[in-house]
Length: 477
Ligand code: BES
Ligand code: MN
Ligand code: ZN
Image 1: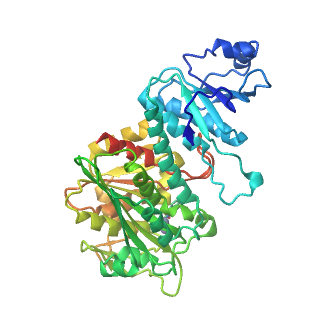
Image 2 (image 1 turned 30 degrees about the vertical axis):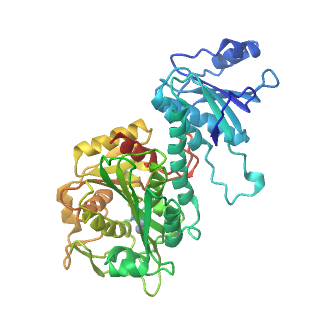
Image 3 (image 1 turned 45 degrees about the vertical axis):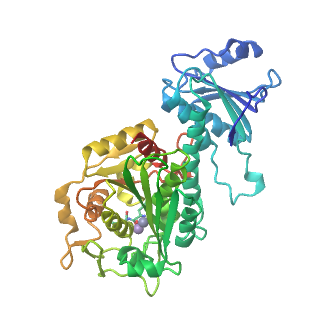
């Protein structure tokens, strides 16, 4: 997808973005339809709500094949994103390959949101669909009326493409994406500035990554550990670690899931996918912070050698964990990664992302990431970035007294806390592996990682949450 170098005179779709305070259709456009467009607006009670649309075939009345009015609500950057996303979604549905957007007003934030929204709205996972069920993707677009340079639109494209990479990795079937191939997706990103280190099973064993190897031991696909390091060209303004849960398929292990709960479990590497998505864009965006992208990858399966209930694992920070449920596996993989980050003295902030608990889905649904942090200011920062990116995040409490629920008779803790506050006790579990002095946030993306129905301009399936939010946070440092 490209930004058209010259204005598109005869685009497949000509989109006019309206806001609730400025509903005026350009006079020449309305005149081409002899006033029928403004009549239609009144007739359909079109109020320019963000993401709403009115589309018509031009039937030769103008060069464009289709004309659409798209609502941006109040006209803020989030409204612009939804309008652009709706236009792009419509284009994809009809297989329209060129798009021309008229958006009056708005600067940098609007341009980035529009670029990003166009990519997100146009995304389809069609790798395995027959030709007859595919539609053409957008090839080029132009945006008029913005008070921002084209480079801001390009930034938006980069953000959108980072998210699309995460979506592809989530949507790909579990027999395509297993620990080795998930690691390869990271390796492919390697450059001079982005070093990628992949550990194989032997190295995991020697390094005492007991959580990842235990979870992965019932699978024929051996686990991996990945550490990507981005070093900025100029002076580095910070040192950040992102950590992802990369369970490429979660059958639940011996605590097997019922089929209904297993069907979407290819999405259980959504945290690692987000980390890979972010890392794919750090160099293009010229970030001036050092970023570590880290994930553990394992398949949680059932076999004669699966890890068992009652097993006790001793993690690298000395914490012992008694396994009470092999389906609470993500926290074990993350615990290894957090111990590893704990030894990286330069790192000040660590953010982990994980499709960690069904309880988070029950609590906040598919529109919110459950956000936990040991630092309220940092939580506030990530909430603000999520809001600006049009992503839902909700600040949840790390209620200390619930640590009681994690007590084990024979080890420091057990890996489950019982039915109540399941997403919180998962967060508390992780906190045991966060080194003193590090500012930490835990993003439980179990709901928004995989949509059971379309959400705004996002098709159902892998949604790549938090990629844009985190990239914008990193850009702001
Ligand atoms: N991967 C699941 C969590 C999940 C559920 C992600 C639904 C996306 C959608 C996780 O590994 C899991 O199975 N968690 C258990 C924890 C329980 C055993 C304490 C759960 O949520 O049931
Ligand atoms: Mn599980
Ligand atoms: Zn899982």
